Image (tube, rainbow, N blue to C red; front, side):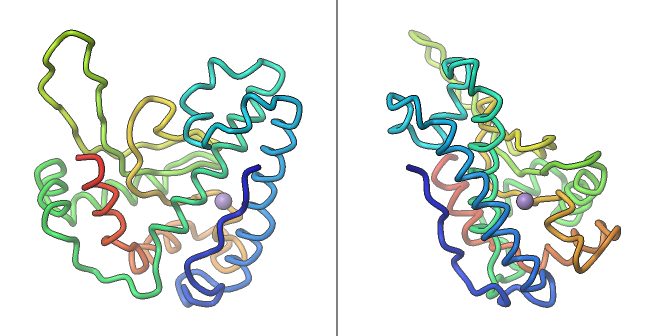
Length: 213
Ligand code: MN3
């Protein structure tokens, strides 16, 4: 059984950037419903119940067609929200740790340029979706020595699709579904995105980066 992970902070902890009511509904209703629907879909498939959420997403081809779309959407929703909660913090610092900061500058030119590109991608998602910082990580070809070629990239996805589906490794994410910001920001998605930078927990993003790079 998949379970809703507790938030690593209180519902009001991200104010004024994300209001308590939004965070509580988002976590206890939206995220909970993805977990519940995923469990319901797996009920008749005991052989899939021991798979991790990442394992399910990475092997969608092997999921029976009857539940494949439901698993794609709800395992995706469960995974995406867990990363979203974990890469925000009320005690976030603006400073990006050195190794990750260096990789960002190498890829995007500067931190400012990276943030601009990321914010623009988040503002431009049409309808419901997510924007990710991810590490592209081509699988080594068997029998060949392959030079590692891991690169940072900004990825936009629709619905609950995510970089795991294309074998990229997600490091951080912003939820731009309306339910993530509408109570407080209404149609002002760019303002939500701008404020979200204040609560990005770079220490966790760097930890994610180090575990993969
Ligand atoms: Mn959401």
